[in-house]
Image 1 (tube, helix red, strand yellow):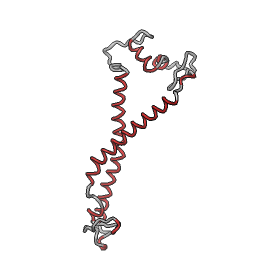
Image 2: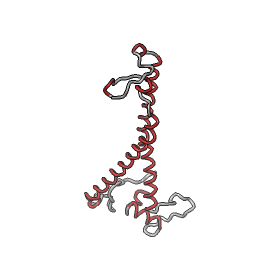
Image 3: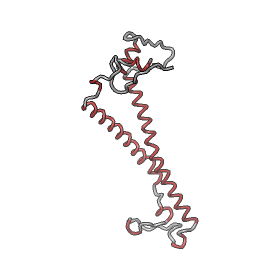
Image 4: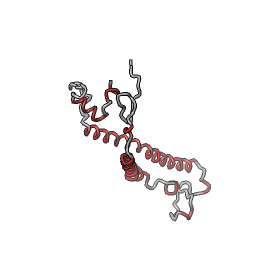
Length: 178
């Protein structure tokens, strides 16, 4: 099926013999700029996640803590919060079914918030990847390459799409795509 016997190079451009060129590595300033762009992108995505958590998730849990909801005062006078009365405030009812179900309900609510904050990182990443990939493809003029009604001209150095492939993937693009 696949008769290709030489190695495909993901970074660098192989010459005709199949060996990578000595100049195929990136200069340190190019690597540093790429590292900074990646760090900026991740910082923007994590900042978006924190903003979503602070604006959407945390307000849903306002007032839902063991002290306010259940009357369980674990910290005593250390927190500076006035003592509230609840189902767990009496020492004789500390292990009752009502007190334990109140504690479990508050714990379950906060567990859902923590799990939601872990999941939103993936949603923001996929959204950012889709937007950035769409913009990159548009700038590379790779629109409509999967459109079956358009003729695709992959003649070496003559076809429009062949020129786009060469500009995007380098002169060795035919070794990968054929």
